[in-house]
Length: 503
Image (tube, rainbow, N blue to C red; front, top):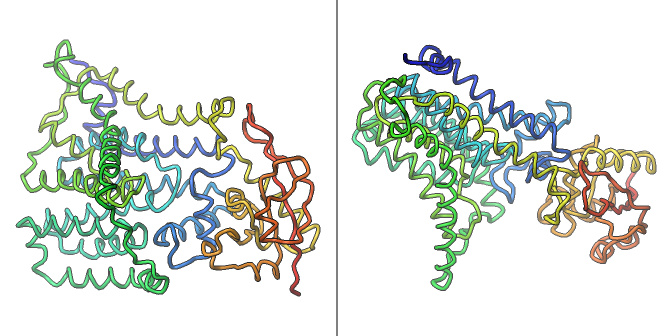
């Protein structure tokens, strides 16, 4: 007797419902992890909020849109980092939704769910998206752009040009890789007959005007700040190292597909006792143009991103792994054929769930175990909220004014900058060019807090801090308790007040 699980029936009868179950499960998982474990945001999120607070037209880290949205989300959540975590998961859900619509248009609703399930196994290992930033924001924009590119070229819907132009413009305001990604779209359309047909109206011209209007402010900023310089091209002597870097980057992308590959191997007919009794998921026939579209955008961004990163010595795939692997789930689904048999359903369901949960379990283990080893400090265990409240309250108590600026240790200042209730400016005093909104003169007039990692119980300022802020009087260093201290030395922060000199 053929057994069909409830999940398979949902895939067949309610593919949209199954999509929402999967996507919201992933979003909830990666929203719960930082809320339960992180006392300070991961990666460069604090730095993102530092720049976002100033609303620049450009930053040393890239175009400004992700920085603006992070600050807006932070403020809407009541100056709480929860808003930024929610924004990251919204990006994940929107990306999966756009990919689901694209897959449904090509392989039908049932196999579109299979494509999303496979994409989820890639996402959790290569781009779970807890750390919101330009790469995370680029993923939904890239997925939406591919969806509307398909509607233009694959379905002949001219009204999709407007949506594509908006997405392309926003992508240019998000990621430095946008130009390469848009070039790949143009190359594909120009090299295919149906793609060239899409350029036979005035819609592409109007789309180009919209893109230019959206990207113009950032372009002006780039020109004014001489930020259009191309990174240095390696010499012949560096080619060996760059070749190894290329192999490492592209190999990392291939390794990210291990979860998807293992599911396909486990679903093989050779491993099933009665393969003919397995339920199947049917799709309509996929034409040649659709296959070209899917396989091109499954391979080209990964290859181009790896090559560019290797050429210029970047340590990550240009554009991010999320963009490079966005179409991998749909590509695997098309490669599987018109009929997909779901063999060993219970076992596959268990393996898929383990794959999805494994990275979250790894984060939990790292947070709780690493402090007991010699592997270094867990940055997300630093109590940013307590630090922000302590320094803000003490400054206001001493000066009767809200804390307006913080300087000193570049690891601590962004944390205090977003966690303090007054949202002070962050002054990178060691590299003033990183904080053009404030300089040493303005800092000394407005006043603020200077912080450093204290090496002793006296809180003696480091020599470089004393050189930049002569005459500061060090206060008694404050100790903060991490989420797990383990074998690490106490977290002592030395600090000094620069009193305001203005009215």
